[in-house]
Image 1 (cartoon, rainbow, N blue to C red):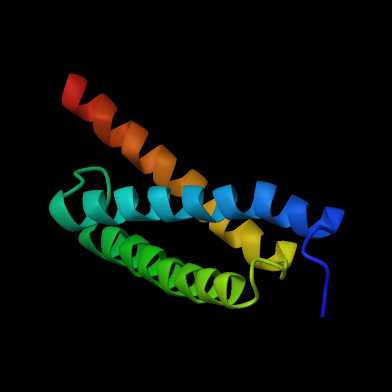
Image 2 (cartoon, helix red, strand yellow):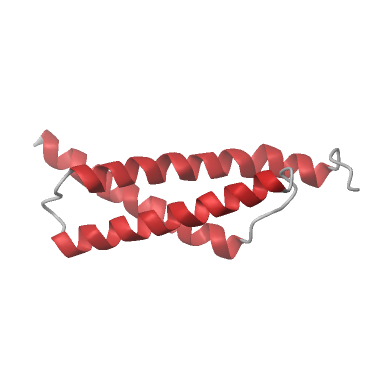
Length: 105
């Protein structure tokens, strides 16, 4: 049986858990925007494709969160998994910023 007081385990709980929650927050916000607004600066296909990628990332994230919980928060996540999520969140931030700027004009 592993010792849950190991520094690595605490690091995972301290860093990874909030990071997963942040991804969940931003994917949820992005999905809401993409499902409820027609973005004039994107074609319907571009918006639909972005929404599809957000939904896929949410599915992947939910799977990772379930595994993280099932292992008592003792499993890490490869950077190869996190980086596409980070890039997607950044893309969604840019879309949201452009949408807000368009509403202020």
